[in-house]
Image (cartoon, rainbow, N blue to C red; front, side, top):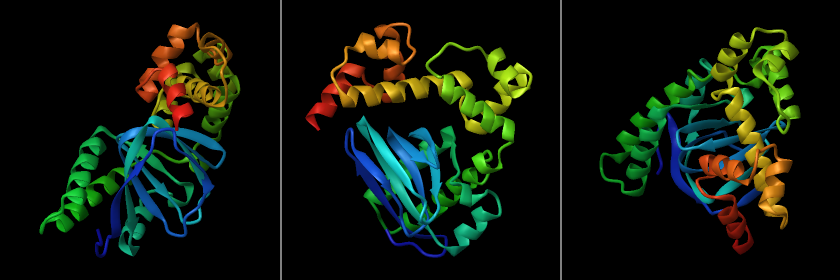
Length: 255
């Protein structure tokens, strides 16, 4: 759908189950609103899992790669005009590829998807209005990595280097010289997930990579990725991907 002023164009894009898109870049800046499904996106050396309710800004020529879960994903791709870029640029550091999550965005994504797939004479106005509402939430997004406090970046690095081992919040706090309560509060505020949630994401991400690569027994993969047992892996994997590791592996082989 072609728009004016704030949004140059908007479209709904479907990504297939298990699809892998190698690192690439786009000549235009874009906003991406996830309607359903989930995927991992690697940007600037970090990988984040995105799902319904996530809104991402991708600067022009920003290298990024994606791996989609076995349920695939449905996304709305928005190409902002000069007015939108100016508005957002006054509220968030666009050059840092920010993203945010809000329950409200799940509803807005559904509304946008409906208007884009079944447009009528009012759809252009409704889409523009809804996009502005969503963009305002990105304008209140937590700081991106480039502008986060150095100790928060050290905390993330610590977690990523020890995600497959057992460590406590006190261990993490000691490593970055902060109080555990302060670490827990600020990490969630800045990264939009708890420390424990982030550890689970990393473990599940690694498990998914092993499932795509070979035929290792699930119990062995669970052990390698820091889970107590196969049942623990299955519960955590289903929480993020919506399916069991076995179904994920089967879908990978068939795709």
